[in-house]
Length: 324
Image 1 (cartoon, rainbow, N blue to C red):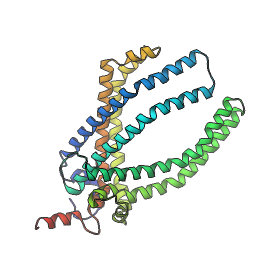
Image 2: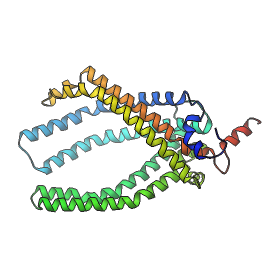
Image 3: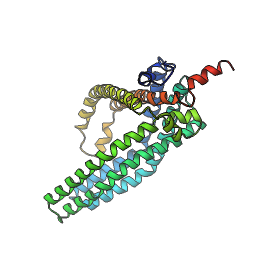
Image 4: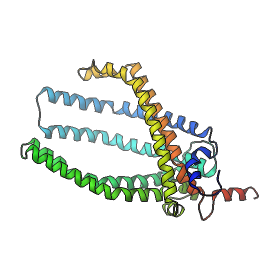
């Protein structure tokens, strides 16, 4: 492994760090198993809400109800029923993500083999992740505010208050405005996301939520970090997409053949035969497995920058510790 920060080191760090031959596979297998079980549990616990929503839609359609307000009320009620489960799932997802992200950074920063736990490091990682994803969510607030009036326009069209041409012109205008705003804001997001990307590694390294430290270690390294990340993410994403599509092609025929026989909600329950459920679980497991590999490897460039903190390299500290 190179002893200083380089583009080559950042690009290949995920494949050169400690336990390169074993860690990624242990990590991906554990992640896929945990996430598949949790996903299946969530679906099982919320299936009645989903089936109730489908049943209500079917009854409204049979009764000839076409008032958009009734459908929006039904959707809102379903959303509110999902909300407590969604909040619980979000908290569980954040905790699981923190456990695996901490395991990733322990390998990159401390040269440790794969292990899972939940302690102070994971709690700090949860805090870092919450702030990170909150920042990402803010990027979605502006597009939402821009497109929000579109729903009102659609409702007015449904009530006959505006013509179709007027509605289309309004929607297209909003879309054009949105594209213009995204054209300006996206490069800003990429800059700050890249500069703060070492924060997960620095949170483990410094034992605190370390956005300020992440900004320091990425100074003067923006293009190597971004370039290495894009290469790994694009190549890895293409590989994940190809394998996922191939697996989906193997699983979907049985599901689609069963779906053709479904006419109403009671028959929908009969769709989930042991074979179909096994296929869906297998696909979910493989997709999580591939996503975990990509999740782990793409952290390499930013972690490499954190490992080679200009204020004091981790490698230097490890060499010094040998003589203590």
